[in-house]
Length: 122
Image 1 (spheres, rainbow, N blue to C red):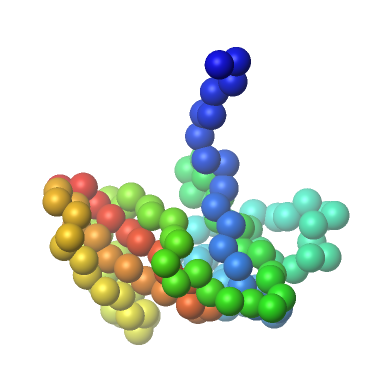
Image 2: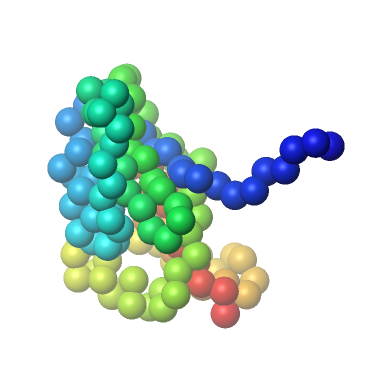
């Protein structure tokens, strides 16, 4: 084979038209991700991009919009108990899930209903 897949550059989640401010509040203010400027040509499509480390999450506008209920990104977290406390303090519901041996994990829905998993290997 002459190619190698090296890493994930970004994950895209969909949001409805006008989703940008709610995305900034959830992904930026609550989760603490850094917003990055979209390329000029892509700004007219709407949506907003965030990054952490060397990865990005792109929230893209999709019409008609339907949230991802099963498909989801899963993010490894350090100090998941602190994340749970942060979510509770911001009135963000989450579901704990102990079905993965060796992991403490929760499922959250973003403001648009997309499922997101956070886990910490213990």
